[in-house]
Image: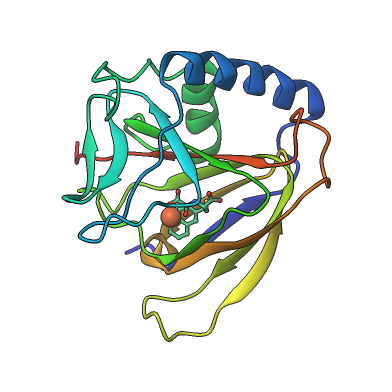
Amino acid sequence: MGGAHLQYLPGYLDEIAQKALLEEIRCLVDRAPLFTPTMPRWGRPFSVRMSNCGPLGWVSDKSGYRYQPTHPVTGEPWPAMPQSLLDLWDATTGYKYPPQACLINYYSPDAKMGLHVDRDEEDFDAPILSLSLGDDARFRLGGRERSDPTQSFILRSGDIFILDGEDRLAYHGIDRIYPGTSLLLEEPGRINLTMRRVSKG
Ligand code: MD3
Ligand code: FE
């Protein structure tokens, strides 16, 4: 078994690589527009808007959280995952299987994401790769129980981190965005990509 594991690669992408990736994300979001997920049961909207690329995408609505092959609004298949992201996964995780979903989170300056665990995947042995672009964010990482103590980190544009082992099922969330801390996006805000393996094998 893996044990606690968090690999933090600050500034992994330089400014040129960040700009190239941002351009790819713009193309993806033209084809698969950002949608507003809603909470299961009550239907309260998230403040974060989302899209996905890859064979599967994560969605949330009144019937629950799930991965599905199509966009919840357009009904179209998600666009393919860019080769640059597949290469990044191989180079940094070395995991034996490719990622199946890349969730694209867009945070306007007032958006946040409450403490949660990512457990809609079947393969908890696979790592999750997270990549930040745009304004800084305060990220909070706790333990396996909601009541466990938490640690805060600032995630900056170009930072990557990889979670596996014990930390794969840790509570985490985004407390706030610091608008104006990056000039990468044209407007204040932040984009986070999380690449996931959903099924086993
Ligand atoms: C820690 N996104 O999409 S990425 C998410 O910055 C999500 O948008 C945040 O949490 C964001 O689910 C944080 C970093 C991250 C992703 C998955 C994790 C941290 C994690 C899974 C387990 C523990
Ligand atoms: Fe998460």
